[in-house]
Amino acid sequence: MQNSAVPDLAHTHARPVHWLATATAMAAVVAGAGLLQPDAATASQAAPQTSTAAAPLPAPDPGDVTLPLDCGGAKSLVTHEVSGDLDGDGVPETVAVARCDAGSGTPPSGIYVLAGSREGTPRVVAALIEPAEKLSVKTIALRDGAITATLLGYSSPEVPSCCPDQQERVKWQWQGGKFVRTAQPQA
View 1 (tube, rainbow, N blue to C red):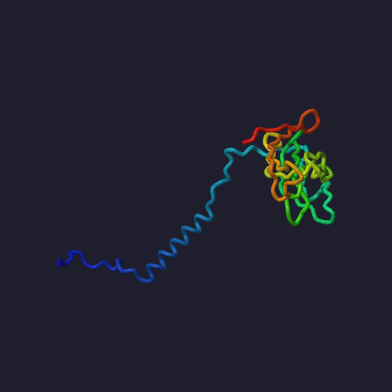
View 2 (view 1 turned 45 degrees about the vertical axis):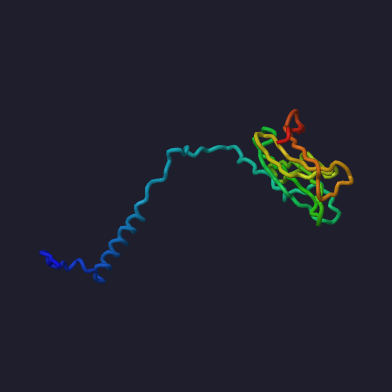
């Protein structure tokens, strides 16, 4: 073993005072970084504009509307809801799928279009499907102002209510002041 020509250096052995000095220096750096904050980013933000126009209405909440369902003492249940501008007026509507909360089987659904008002009270403006049609809604979507849905139904009254055996894809579009239903090709 060869002896080093350099004498032992005192600072190569960490002592508590060295750790304390290092911790103090790090605390000063962290505190300084906390005080120096960059300005808020403004590259993509437009200057605030004042406007006298009213704020846009929120989409109607199905929980604020009494839906036209006759559940015979059972409560109604909203199973799906989608919102968007359906008639091009810049105000969102909500499409709510609701059914009676039955204990078994596949209860029929209703599809209702809800519109808001400046007073804040939403209302049902259209029934796209009524429960009397004995259809259930598997899926519903809203895109580009059109409502699309996959409906489940029955080929005959002998088919058990648990097991719909027919499926249909449909689309509703606002045209001429009403919702027009068209059949869609099966996926």
